[in-house]
Image 1 (cartoon, rainbow, N blue to C red):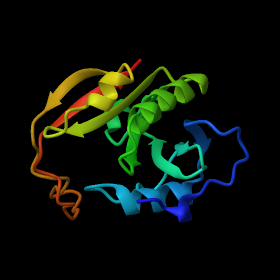
Image 2 (spheres, rainbow, N blue to C red):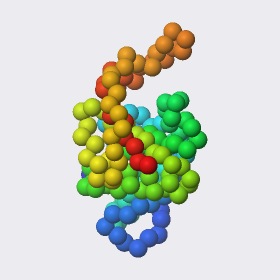
Image 3 (tube, rainbow, N blue to C red):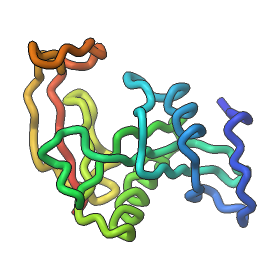
Image 4 (cartoon, rainbow, N blue to C red):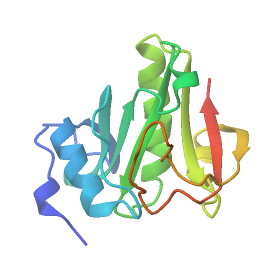
Length: 163
């Protein structure tokens, strides 16, 4: 399906698949339309996109502070969301570009998570490595800090890293 609403307003030489800048609002809209199981994040450090030769946005990556406090060391960022319309190689291109951008900004580590049911093939193709397998947790709700579930809490996850 071609989303003309996501045509990128950047003048570029026509390339089959190329990186484009994406603002927060556009990235959130794309994630809301295309992500399988999460809503857009509430903030970011930067976002980027991949577009086809016609300038149609085919995927986005949103990079922000690590969700887990113990990774918030000032030198680590997290890919909080990626979403594509299924265009071949778009997700791998986004993960590779996200790491290059984070590194260029002075960060020494970029992390992300996949659910245990996801293969991580896009991450492998972009040169990322598995650094941990995390067991399913009951959720984010604790007696000291009440929180609502998001429907994906009791799922094992894999922690990936680019460094």
